Image 1 (cartoon, rainbow, N blue to C red):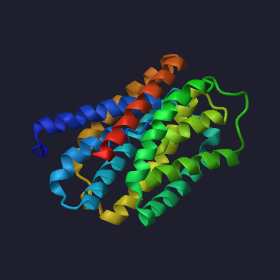
Image 2: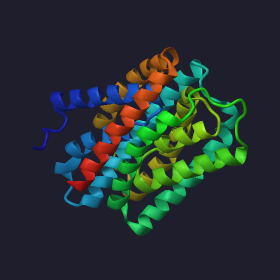
Image 3: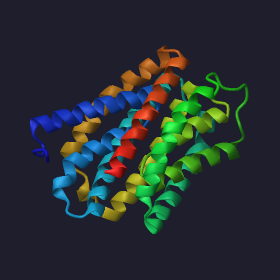
Image 4: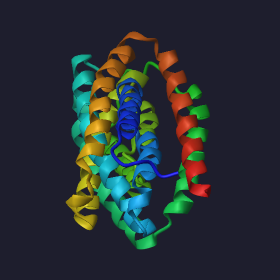
Length: 263
């Protein structure tokens, strides 16, 4: 059933979804697209006759919110000294280039539904694989070229499927020697770069008026309130519990994406 747009109930739902996603962003370094997209689809579906227009509006609004919430999360992680800034430049450069390449490829191939199912399956596998990765990191980090590659791969997959790439960058950063906590914080910053690039590309294609200020304000307000809380919890709980939370979040996101795609 379509919701009455911008009613108190809808704004309250958006705010609650934003709070929940903001806590996940601060706690686990995840961008929250698996939370935003189902809610925005429910909100915007009555307004668009064409599926392509609906998807464009949902992605534009979701990325707009992710940029704001990821920015607040990054500031919170900075205050907790969790971001490894020495590796941010190659990581961010690779993420920006990858996001452009992935987005352009998605426009050419149009295999989003198929890729969404694969990505959902990847998240389910990642939930299990995460348990076998070291929590504390290595004594030395990989080369800048390696971090450039991590950024490019996470940005490319994010641009192709339509997410900010954190669920790709975080496990790869752990492979590069970062601890789980540092991978989450640094990956969140890389996801911010991917989201900014994709927001620009999506808005350039569909137009700025597709962004709804009331919807984005409610989601972003909740997210910006929740993300510092999540970052504070991130700095205080054990990495084993963070690993459990990351795995559970991947399972939830993977099942959500698969369920939405096969409907």
